Amino acid sequence: MQATALVATTRGYPDSGYVVENIHAGSIAVVDVQGRLLYASGDPRYPTFTRSALKPFQALPFILSDGPARFGLTRDELALLCASHSGEDKHLEGVESILAKIGLDPGHLECGCATPLFYEFTGQPLPQDRSWTPLHHNCSGKHSGFLAWCRLHGAPTRGYVERSHPLQQAIRATLAEAVGMPADWMPVGLDGCSAPNYAMPLSTLAHLYARLAQGSADAQLGGAMGMLFDAMTARPDMVSGTARTDLAWMSAGGGDWVAKIGADAVQAIGIRSAGLGIAIKIADGNSRALHPAVYAVLDQLGLLDDERRAQLEGLRQPPIRNARGTVAGDIRTLFSLTPQA
Image (cartoon, rainbow, N blue to C red; front, side, top):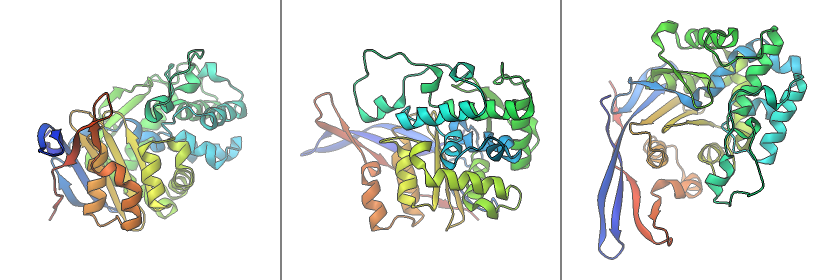
């Protein structure tokens, strides 16, 4: 990976200045709706595991089969199919509603158990009298959509995360067709929620999001893309959660930006009005470097007006605090996007 220095962390004292302590390298791709590379930093074509940025497209086989209408899923529930949710009450209730509509229960989810992300991102203390179930996993919405596809097609619900399962074969084939490359060209890996995940060039992921942002205007997947874009941008709080960055990006975008983060510092954003797709990968997987990099890309592309700058200021150059809450440094960007011929 020909990554380049994107973000630095500093340490020092406010009265004597800060010194760079760590540097996070990575790559950025900015493309148009046709997939033409417009701006880059690092290696925009490096094969990158998409992680949770893939979630909207993992829902495509279900949507293309008219699954939401067949089961009566609401827009909010469709947003959960794309979510890395925080396990707040509205998220849990939404996933339970999807499962009830398809005649299943949380015991059918094969994503594993995880502490709700709400506590990590809000700083709220963990309850001492709670036990977590697969329903609390941030991927339970996606997995409820997986199970809905199985019910719709009469496929086994047991083992739906296995690569050989008809659902996962359908996802792989649909994704390969959507990106216009043979399925064998997409390396496969095991994601944190036990489902297969795929790697693709960073610029290809950016192109998917440029198309997603165009919604129903997409020539290949218009209706499905329209449903996904509308659900995600109408309910970014269902896709994400309190104090989460995807909620911040999409709220600032005001229905024009669609955003999805992935584990190990992957971020994809589509900008409808500008006809752009953006994908960013921090090479060492450290998400603390990701958010200032996203802000800088949006800023350098001229997408931030004064109101958006104010909304997103906390992500521009966040302070680093020690255990007493004292500012010990900050996280700052180092790069300028390079126009591509």
